[in-house]
Image 1 (cartoon, protein in one colour):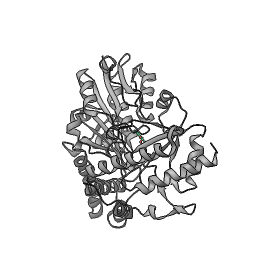
Image 2 (cartoon, rainbow, N blue to C red; image 1 turned 180 degrees about the vertical axis):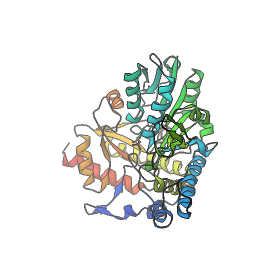
Image 3 (tube, helix red, strand yellow; image 1 turned 60 degrees about the vertical axis):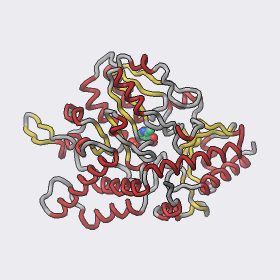
Image 4 (cartoon, rainbow, N blue to C red; image 1 turned 90 degrees about the vertical axis):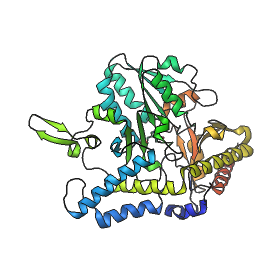
Length: 410
Ligand SMILES: Cc1ncc(COP(=O)(O)O)c(C=O)c1O
């Protein structure tokens, strides 16, 4: 089931470059992934051969561009296991997908006193839209806490969900690596009469996402973390929900008719796609999911489980008690994102020193400040791995961290 990582690496032109005279070791894929040549070529080809605005032209290249754009929707629908392409709305990213639900569904369904349940490990993208709504409408936010092992503590979930209208949670944490049991959480939401929104930004790139198994109501993904370009993401939602939701942004192809006294919205999914959409980016995303499925999502997962086990062992063996790793220890329940701190050294200082060794990691709050408060730190250093990483990258990280320790002389 595994694949040849060296062959995958050869497909990523950026991995051939050097930084500070060292081989580039990219360990920041949870933030944004690198792009294979297949994605770059697909976008380049569209711009060179078939580029025009979509839906509006009756000439050949506009029809080609429209076919490519709508083909991307069908491809993403197939990747997610959606029942129909019309359930897939293209957005700029997962942040916009969640905001679409917050502005369209939530504002037409929720009122003062209604409850939304979130979890303590959410990215700000799945927190701030609900804070804005709470301030505007008087909606109550409740939070599923974490266990000592950095998983969701679901022991009190029934009570938290009691009377809730929406349970919005991540499938996988961008800080802890924790992978949540999405079907069980969706079941709990439905049992309480709530809808379930899944932020799959950190799941879709790394594990097989099967909407039928999840049975959720809203799912957001973001292309740039799954080998695709920036500025393309998607909201999947049940057809009947999308049908009943009012438009979010106005203008462009989201109308069927516009008059002086009002407008009639288009059908889904176009009702939610205002203005000129990211056409080349949708084509790039198509190439990205083709690339991932050519490797095989099960093979991607297996590779990452093996690499995560190797990395956790290497970090613990080398640094022992001096390193604190935030996340589940069992590699079966976590992704390839590893957050850690060294006592007495700031995360930003660590990341700066390892950069001098060609190693790219991220330091900070990772847009998850409520989580940072829960785990009691202001920042962590985060190394996150993907299909193009191998054990040599982990070894380079460990050596660079050892150099940082020496530099700060602890
Ligand atoms: C879990 C999670 N949700 C949402 C986002 C936001 O992604 P985007 O900036 O692509 O909207 C991220 C990005 O790091 C993430 O990790």
